[in-house]
Image (tube, rainbow, N blue to C red):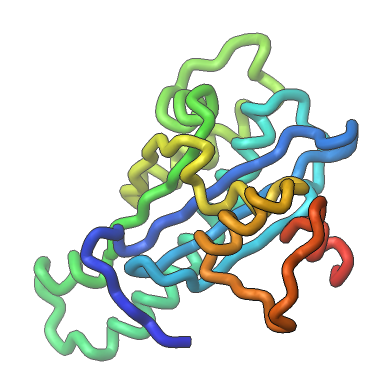
Length: 195
């Protein structure tokens, strides 16, 4: 892997998305983790539980993304920590790289950033409370990003040919065989076939 740090990107950027119950089945999570603009991890998985709303599906995706992003952050800390001989506050802030979670669901963002729960959301209140605690303790910044711009979008659903090409370009993927992909093929369905 070749790292090409880009100044216009956050240190650790997590793009998390979900497609709510495609075909009446469990929802699918897509996550892309970038380190200084370079993709270091991605995942496309069927969610392990059945969600009852798109907000809850996005919340499950956000939990997956936060866990993966915190793992990348911990690895980065372990790699950088031996290089810092005397840990000053400045050095510590260099080790504590900022983490940004990008989400395209405003209801999910509200759930992640506020403590208000109602009878309609009580079934996932515990998961929401856990991720809120992590966000507060770890200083994760949650930002809205339109669905068309979110990197993980192509990992959650079957896409038409043109959208698939766009998504693959965003993820810096290329066809090894040099052939065009067939319509209806998706990164998510490819993951299912290999799993």
